Image 1 (cartoon, rainbow, N blue to C red):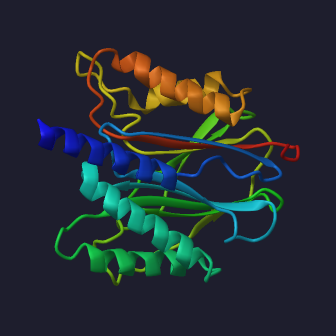
Image 2: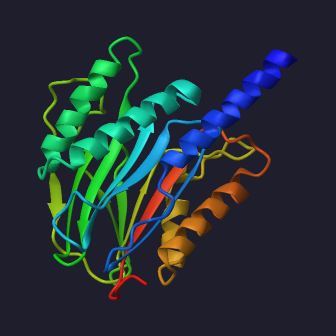
Length: 257
């Protein structure tokens, strides 16, 4: 019993430490509304998100990272902390997105030679003033891009291997230059659409798209909350089997408060 109490105390402390590594609040960027949420299925997990507001083109730009470490629990949390540190350190030194991710991949590969863990990552730099996006998809599910004016969804694809698999892999940037007010970008981990209910049915991306369409006039924070509530309602009494993380970015025509 003493050992179990000690272990529970250690896990609670690890949870507090990991939660403190997530951003306390989204950055204030003119022309953008940003919201984020992360929920772990255990005390600690491998999902993470981060905002890098010192990496990009200028004052109205921000770097956004969403990652998913293979596995769960303490091992995933430890690697998650390393990846976060590598990203932050490298972002302060480089202006080239592909070079930054390449260097981070090399560092992670050294740490995972024995464990064979890997990390999927979607990294995006968003410039509201220049109306452009740059992103790298490293084995991660593509972000959802929704344009309410045309009622069209696109996925931000791009070739890229998960981090930690091949230290010599060369990552390629993807870009678009057509950002318009009202457009919504959702970057998530597979714990969202792979959430299952008591009947074993998956939440799926169709429901996620329907939510974005339904809340097209809402703020990014309201959209994030709506997604989390919809997942919880869908799951019902079923156990949460995977971490859930999402970042919602909405293009707006006003300055941050």
